[in-house]
Image (tube, rainbow, N blue to C red):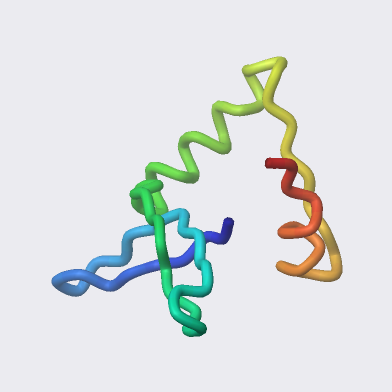
Length: 71
């Protein structure tokens, strides 16, 4: 699973996606709307108030964050 953005009518929107091989070609097989940058910021900001949600940051970038995701 990965996070990506689309630019629609000049605005940027974030989506979650998953890719898989279909007939030997990598294609996106699933995507779901995550929100705008502002709405995601508000969700992360309020996550400090929820005891079951824990956020972590990694100095070595996106790869480490992806490896830390537990599905």
